[in-house]
Length: 280
Image (cartoon, rainbow, N blue to C red; front, side, top):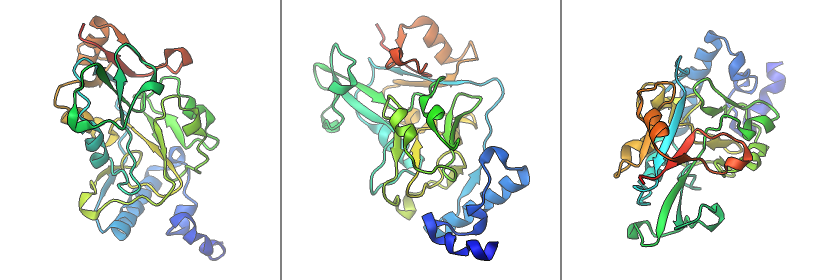
């Protein structure tokens, strides 16, 4: 059988029959998962010349992550965008970015009126506010429902993840997302060797191949170790807040109790875990 499948190793950049026959993530035994992580590390070293540490980080008990973003403080500098690209090994050519920052006319939240091609060196501008949009980590995610092969699912801590080895590139999830949060790799992603972040997670920031979908995953390789997302750490104004909504003492819990918060496109019933608010 292995000999019969050998010609398939060249399809979609396969390097082994084992990769072609890999089980779904949820079906892997601990031993099979360890072998898979080792194989992926070998592929990364072979393809990119980088020794990576690829881990499988599980959701922590008693944790449900949410994000809160203060639109009063956001100045549209887009530093969050660049930090996300660097942390999560996003393709530089063609460019892929998980976060869009829209310059919005004051008085509207119509995303169609937002401008994401504004000059970030001339911010903030009078008469505008800035609206960063990324995966909303919905409690009722339409992207999960439409995937025909269960390549994307929601984990216990609220993060919707993607198994890049299982994704078939049908793009149903991309079409289903009302926030334009998913990105499809039309071409082989390119990242300069010296810019690759070697601290990786299987369901997170490991390099993706051509023909699969990817998106924000709340920096799973960081947040499941108790760290903050890269976008939050680089924010110069403290606009971004992140934490465990199940902890009543967490900053995000206090924000949701004391601030007037809202979510994007509430009417579509996705129940986002990404909240926006103003100081006033």
